[in-house]
Length: 474
Image (cartoon, rainbow, N blue to C red; front, side, top):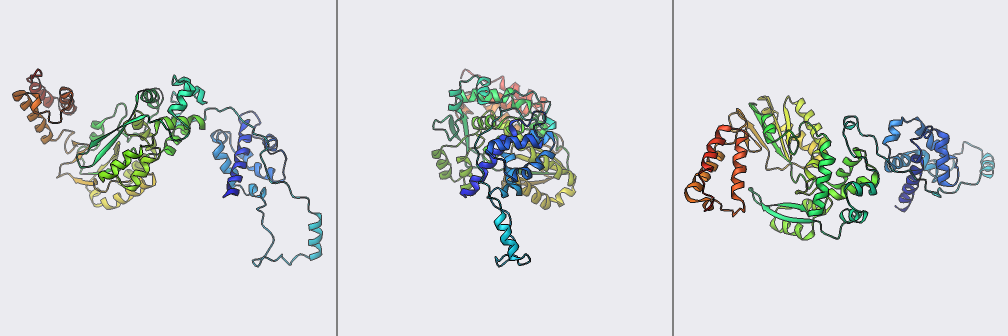
């Protein structure tokens, strides 16, 4: 283990040196690479040319995409790197004896003429380069994103001091708690955890959301938390289909860890240090006492507790929905391709996955289910086993609470319950219906009426006539 760690440090030191002037004219030619590597090692060993020669064949785009970690990994995987540590094969047979095809006298002469072995490699000098934005993938090159190359730049962009940035995004697990917790009862039982950032961190996250994340497009299948898309557009994609199949992702936000979030920032071109700080600002370790409370309630298994204890996207942070969509891009890409194979349509609203298509899709349900489960698992998520539904046309087909058999609409029983609530509030006063003791029951009712109005202006008008009869003074 110690030797492996030592080799990794040598590879990282060489990677730093090789990347230092790689962007300059001739910076990736063999003489330039050899000179920088030799300066870092304090010697020019014989194996260096063999290690560096393949790198000279790489394109400028490949060199631009390298960072210290990826280039160091490439160096470690090279057989020539093993020569530096004496990994070359001995000409011995399986019994460990020398190959007898050469005369012993000749071997003695060869041994006598061998040069003195080279010193084990050491990094004698660190050759650094200033951090710079990396090129973004082709589909993201048009995004107008701020250039932030150092933590100092990030602090200025966020209108923070360096000390404030380190306080909000420490290098290790924070001692200060920057989140508030609330537990809400789920309709299906159990508790839902909301992790809400405190004032200063929430301001920082909102700035990241509006000035950075909102500029990055998500996959076309994602309809949640995206401008121009909504529950209505998500449901409308599946109207009038012979079969609608629903899947649900378990613990959607908690399943997205710091490594996935960091990969998003790196893909957007940010240097390693800045990506690490942005990740710390947008992820969170749940307090141990909260995890124990959820486990006592029985709604959190061991793996769920482990995910919450590690850095994850907190449900309740302004940046979490946008980052979740970006982290799920590859999931959406693969599931959309799967839908095409099955002759179906696919959309996702947060953790709600929906496929719809012809009647033949019902016969292929088991195969589709197996493929979806495997892709979801491969992308780091898990399906909720109790929330998978296959809905043919003769049943009520609901997508995120919206009936889609003929056209998107709120279920009739939901509309009737709201109408009855408004009617009773008008007859007996709003307090008679505010059983949950909501502080702003008026806004609550208006929100429910607005939800219905997305799908039927006629229904909304009928509900508003009842709402206008309520005496809010009582």
